[in-house]
Structure formats: structure tokens, C-alpha cells
Amino acid sequence: MIISVLNIKGGVGKTTVATNLAVGIAKTGKTVLVIDTDTQGSSVTWRGERDDSMQHITVISLTSAAALRKQIISFRDGFDCVIIDGSPHVNALAAVSIAASDLVILPVGPSPLDIWATAKMVTQIEDAQAINPEIKASFIINKFNKVTLLSQETKSVLGEFSISACTTTLGNRVAYADTMTQGLTALEWHDPKAKAEVTDFINEILGIISWEKLSA
Image 1 (cartoon, rainbow, N blue to C red):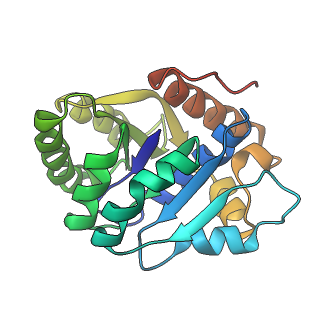
Image 2 (image 1 turned 60 degrees about the vertical axis):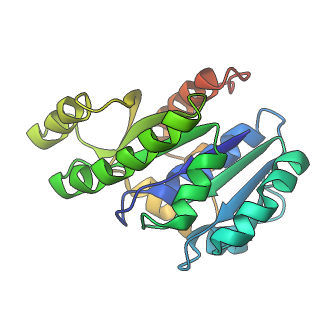
């Protein structure tokens, strides 16, 4: 199973989504590899801060489209789940990631800039789906605040795309930033609301790919 977490806009929470999803899937007993394709290396940095006593996640850096294309099959054969933490660009690397994926997750924030940027990525996904209709895709709204009009409007605007949005949303919580700096995830943190919404999100993704869900 290959899952890509992509968006051409930075700051939408790709690494937060990728790492939380990785730990959640690993907790179901699957082996997980995270491929950090961003030169900034946020997932690699997160893994470097992670204590070896925690749920094991393998993380590598791979920023070459050619290298990813050549190695992705062996990565898939070596792990139950490969999660590609994408770079903020529409380029050859993103194209390879999408083409190789069973599922593409698009984190998007409640911002017009996020939605405008996302539209370009949706077009690239639709082009790949025209060749391989088996590729699934879903939005996940990050930094969601149910009391703001902008967050509600984001839900409405995303409904105009061909790609559906997860029913789960991730809130604008300090817990996500705090856990990233310590190599942790919301599943391993003391904020029950963050843990609950991440569990719901992971289980929604596991439902899409027809895998066993994470216990609460």
C-alpha cells in the first residue's frame, strides 16, 4: 500500500498528517516506511527526535524523482505501507508519487490560498486517475475551527472538486506542533481531543483502503 500526502502549498500540515498516519497504521501491526521527499526534511527531523522505545517507524529522505521511480516497487515490497511525505511543488517528484499511489491525501487549511494551490494538485491527480482509475484521493481539512466562517466555507468550496473530503477534520491545536518537535504524534500525547480526532482520521483512511481500524 502506497499513500502520498501532497500539496504544493507549504504549511498545510503534510508532515503532521504523514507522521500521525504512519504511527496510527503501525499501531495496527503494519510495518511502515515514510519517504520524506521535501528537501526541508521535516519527517527525517521528526524521526531523529523520536525515542527508540516508541512505535517503530522507518523514515528515509529521497528527493529525486528518478530515484523514487526506480525504488518505489522495492519499498512497497519491503513494507506493508509506504507513506510519501510530499514536497510543496507540482513537479516530476509529485507526478511519480501520485502515479505510484493507491491513495493520495491532500491536507488543506481554511484559507483561499490553500484552496487555490490545491486546485493545481487536483488537476494533476485527475490526469493520473485518467490513466489509472484505481488511484483514490481525499482531502483532509487541517487547522479547522468550527466557529469561523472561513472554515465552514472551506468545506463548501472543497465540495466543488471531483475529490471528496474526509468527514473528519483536524483542529488548530498546539498539540500538533508540540508533538512534532519531540518526535511524537497526537496518539502519544496528553491532549485527548487531538488524540480523538487523529484516531477518527486514521480510521477513516483505513476504511478507504479496507484495512483493520485502529482501536480507540
